Length: 204
Image (cartoon, rainbow, N blue to C red):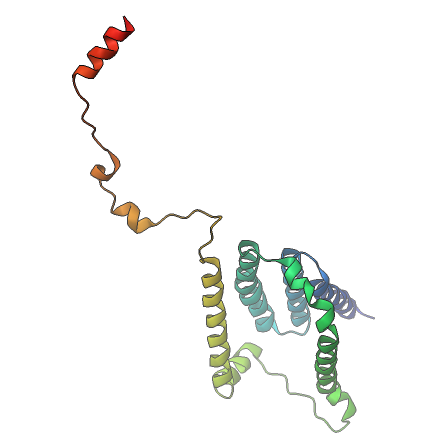
C-alpha cells in the first residue's frame, strides 16, 4: 500500500465519521460543523483523484458560502429541539427504507464499471477544468441553471428567516433615525414664574 492509498483511507474514514455525526449530533451547530469537516474530507479525496477544480469548488462554494450561511441561520433562528426530535423514531423506518434505496442505487452505479469487463476506461483530459467547463455550459446548461436558481431561493429563504420580527429582540430602523429632528427630541416646558418663589419661602 502506497502513500496515496493510505491518505485515501484516512480521509474516507474521516468523511464517514463526520457524515454519521451530522445526523446523530444533538446540537444543530455541532452538526453543521461536522458537515464542514465532511466537505473538507471530500475535497481532499477529490484532490487525490486529481480533480482540482471540484476540490476547490467544494471548499469555496459549500464550505465558504453555503455552510457559513447555514451555520448563521442555525445560530440565529430559535429552534425548538424538543419539537424537532419528537417525530424522530416515528419517521425512522421510512427514513431507513429511503436511505437504503439511495445507497443501493449509488452502489449499483459505482460498481457498474467493475461488473462490466468490456467497459473502456475514460480518457484522461489534458485539462480537467476546461473539459468540465465545456460539459457544464453545453450539455448540462439547463441543470446548472436550475441548481443556481435553487441556491438563490435557499439564500432568500435563509435571509427571510433571520430577518423575521421577534418579540424578545430589539432592532433599529435606520430610516426613522435619519428623519429625526431636534424638535422631536427636545421638549420645552413653560413653568410659572412664582413657583420658584413659593418653594424658596417654604424652604426658609
